[in-house]
Image 1 (cartoon, rainbow, N blue to C red):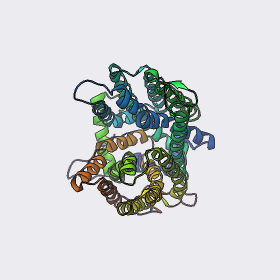
Image 2 (cartoon, rainbow, N blue to C red):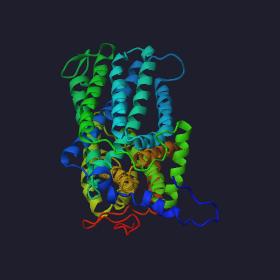
Image 3 (tube, rainbow, N blue to C red):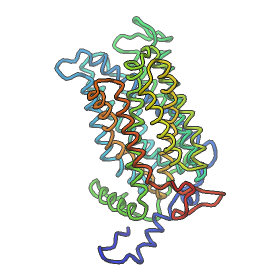
Image 4 (spheres, helix red, strand yellow):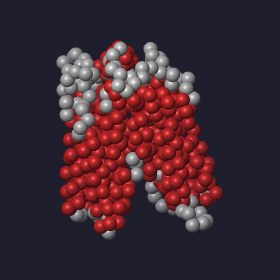
Length: 480
């Protein structure tokens, strides 16, 4: 590994070596180093993991099992600390664990050429945790089991996203990375919608001692516990294709020592390689900071959207789920369309336009009232969420040095975790300061604008134009 020259010394011979290692290893020559994407089958297999993983995000973490834990299992929890507080603290601990381990985990996956194996192990661990949720009955004594399983599953799931995102270059070419990324995001949106509808119609809808078309008994939370098992089976089934269709990452020609380093040593390797990235191409560091901020704002849109719908715009409780489904559909369609635009003009323009459009729609929502206005401008706003998310993944893939995608996406996860307090904190602060729920929108817009401001100086990745691969130091089609 080449290190920086001492202060005051000219960098002569080491510079070409660094250029060969980092600048030369761009997406432009990815097909020759990683293997060119082998058609639609491999892309579909990769996207099916996103489709299946929505079982954890939508059903377990957001809409069904976490609500069951706080509102049913922990409803009669003794003491002054509520089940919701315990849930927040438990997921917070899991988040800290992910933030600390994600960069070195991705680095190790790359160095050991075990990216696919790591994805398989982490996915399997998540599925096992989801399956064991069946044993969390309607008794506050079971709350602790549920919290441990949810935290463990959450940590494994987020770490699994590191090798999964790093695989994007293996299933795309420099000319298709945008549309493939958009396809994956859309699959995640649609998969969540389909599974939520199945769970609601089959296991949850209705009143009384049995629920859903399957008339599942509610005694001891059986209907929700079966939903957890269904979600686990769903994730397992749709995660399998990528493990068979996408080949394992080839071992890198150069050895950074990450594969043999211990826990502390891994951070030494990480810090050394971060210094090289900063010296050779600062765009990666700049984009990691910018994307962390605006991705937190995007998450805030979905986190607080339902609250705003009911408390500010008078959307009926029964219509919130319908709006959530509609919002996911338009975000998915936006991701698919924007993916093709990304490949033509570059991901930076897609992100900038998306964030700008969201700022406009959000500003309008600050001024209007009533359900109809929320449906119109709320859906217009969510149209641009999918494109921003998909283009962010494409942007980072195009910048990442070949063979170090896992390390870079590990940093992507960590930086996102590091600033995840911004949107919730500003939302709450604006609501408190102005004594109005509507003011929370302004808090989210401030975070969105901050992310856009940090992104603007970051030069866009180089694109492949006219069939020729541009060099990492050549002119970018989107100089942004």
